[in-house]
Structures are given as structure tokens and as C-alpha cells.
Amino acid sequence: MIAKDSHPTCPVGEKHCEYLDEIASLRRQVRELSKLVHKDSLTGIFNFRFLIQSLELEMERTRRCDVPTVLILADLDHFKQVNDTWGHKTGNDALVQIANSIRGVVRKLDIPCRFGGEEFAIILPSTELLVGIQVAERIRNTIQQTPLLTNDGEINLTASFGVDVYVATQNETPELFIKRTDLYLYQAKTDGRNCVAHATSERIKAESNITAGERNALFNLFRPDKKR
Image (cartoon, rainbow, N blue to C red):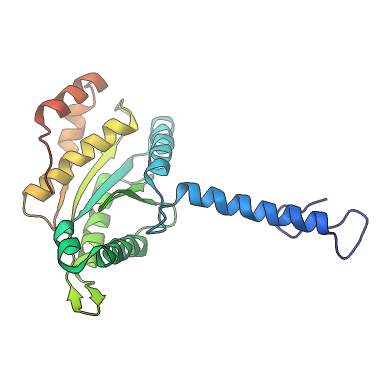
């Protein structure tokens, strides 16, 4: 018999059983591989694949339990300049530090992910919009106050944030929710960077009766190509 969370025990009482040792080793490898599938190899936080899976689950929880889900999108400002000036290794170090700053602020139940490139996403389950905005501000402030230490000195980092919330009266896919939040991230970039742009309670109420198709049409109409 193999105990769930311990080393396997031999069914005939032997102190050493090479076959069960091998099973235990394989079980540990499966657990590690499962983690790797969902983790970003550079930063150690969750990857885009896990973001979509988790967002779909949390949005379903919102619809069933009527508890809001907040999504935060964050983008490191002037990342190309960091890479061009100090090199890609320093750029990677900056991304790792941003991920660590996010982890230092969010709760254990929150889901920080690397969205792609220099962009990050954080899912805040069972969270009101105002709280999500406050979390984004804390992360933004932490990043701003934590320069990246290099052999050539300190590099000041900042990031821009977009925050939106999904409520039970809305009807959309995770992809549309991400698009909606990305509009606020784009707004933060155009507002001068190193700031948080977010939805309002009034806008959420106004959009509650809009269909997913109508909302997608609005995104395509108003969303310009982004240059960050």
C-alpha cells in the first residue's frame, strides 16, 4: 500500500523495496512536471496557459456564487530600453524582480501569472473592484521603490496597470475579460505610465446588459494598436 503523502510502505514489511522506491520517485517526478507545465520558467509564477484555465474557473465561480473576480494587468515600462541599454540578462533580472514584487503583495489564494514578454496578470478571486485597485497601487508602489541592483548600479523600474472586475450579471469569455482589462492598461500607458487605470462602478452597471458580441464589437472599434 502507498500512503498518499509519504514514502510507500512495503506490503510484506520489508525495510527496503526497490520497486516501491521507484514508484515513489516517479510520483515525485510527475508532481514536478505538473508544476512545470503551469509555471513560467523564468519568473517561477504561473504562465499564460494557467491564467486562462484559472480565469475561466473563477468567472464560473462568480456566476454561481455572485462573488466578483478582479483581473489586474501590469506592463513593465520602457522594457525595450532596459534590454537595449543593459542587455537581455538584466532585462530578465528585471522581470524576475517584478514577479517577486507581485508575489510579495498578493494573497496566497491570488493567482499571479506572466502574461507574455514584460506583461503580467493577477487574478484576485472573491475581490471587490476597490480592493483590486488598492492591490494594484501597492504593487506599483513596491516596484517603484525597489530599484534593480546590478554591477553597473541601480536601475529604477516602474510599471503600468489596468484593473477591471467581472460580476455575475456579465456574460463573456475569459478572452473578452482580458481584452476589457487591457483597455485600462493601454489607458495607463497613454496617461504617462507608472499609474493605475481602472473600471468604475458606473461603467460596470452600464455594461451589465450588453451582450458579449456587442462588447467585442466595441473593443474592435475603440482599441488602437498598442505601442508600449
